[in-house]
Amino acid sequence: MGVKLGILGLGTVGTGTVQLLQDVVGRNPLLQEVEIYRVGVRSLAKIRDVELPADVLTTDLESIVNDPAVDIVVELIGGLEPARSLILQALKNGKHVVTANKAAIARFGAEIFTTANQAGVYVMLEAAVGGGIPVIQPLKQSLSVNRIHTITGIVNGTTNYILTRMQTEGSNFSDVLADAQKLGYAEADPTADVDGLDAADKIAILASLGFDGRINLEDVYCEGIRQVSKTDITYAEKLGFVIKLLAIAKQYTPSSPLSVRVHPTLVAKAHPLASINGVYNAILVEGEPIGQVMFFGPGAGAGATASAVTSDILNLVAVLKTSTTNPNPLLTCGHQDYCEIAPITELVTRFYARFLTKDQPGVIGKLGTCFGNYGVSLESVVQTGFQEGLAEIVVVTHDVREGDFRQALTEIQNLEAIDSIPSLLRVL
Ligand code: HSE
Image (cartoon, rainbow, N blue to C red):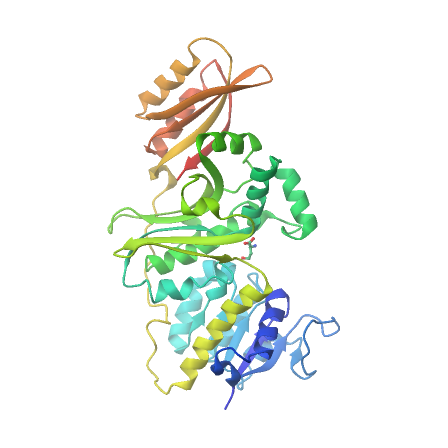
């Protein structure tokens, strides 16, 4: 007997998934068991890139999650509602769920996984992070024998595309964003991408898997790339760095709170993440005893994301084909407790800061004194440029507690010679 899918949504990813499932020759033979039984769409009139029998399409999404014949619901509509309610209803009805919806999982994961566990079904989300890159199942299975200490990702293709173009063309953020919107690389409303919210959802999910606990999204520190200027990209380049929007989850010792954050970051050119350019994503996982493992690939796109969605479907087909009623602990989400997340002020990191100051004797000395008052040690200080009569001074610190660094900055801001501090970036 075939495994019946109810697919919710026939946009880019839904269409890619249907195409993949309609052309299974040469792919895993288990996919031949899958039947595209219902597909929920917003409009029946819309011209589609896939052919489906008329009785498969419906605009009644609730009827799909309530249909006793459906074995697996594949949620590809995205957004918070009605996705959340449809997922919950499907789970309560005993259906397994595959979803690409990082926003819903990052916010409602506790409710969704509790409901799934109660119903004895699985929620699969390979496509929610890193598009086509297999990273969720590796974290849940292959890497789960390691003690993970750091997950560092470039998990948003839009911002990586913008930063890469700013770097290679020497262009401004707003010019590249406008062009990226024209070319379809950025949304008309780019907020979720450029303000780091999409990356925050994704690192919350990765941290939850890597550190085996729930993550409260509100505890994830999030800074986007709007304030990254071409001046900083040029300075970073001179200092041996590129600027990337990184999503980082780190646990310094097995008992310490997690640091989970998204922010533009100076990355040394020799670091493996420095060469990830354009719309590509990469996730570097570090742990014991494995050391470093990096996953690289397309973070979005119809075919790539369909690959991830279909791999989840395949896993579930295998589950449905085996007779055991015991839940597979490598597919369930077992953790109940929330991870403790340290406030950003407790972060210990290096900083890059750019100051505009009066060009007069003793300014660098005063900066050094203020930093010294808060235990901030400087790795390098350069003064190369002038902007509208003001001297431009760029400082890179050694590791410092962020709270101490910010206190030093407050004191520096009050110095008569300081005009402004246009940029402040963390260094990996
Ligand atoms: N908006 C995302 C990105 C793609 O730019 O990477 C889907 O997760």
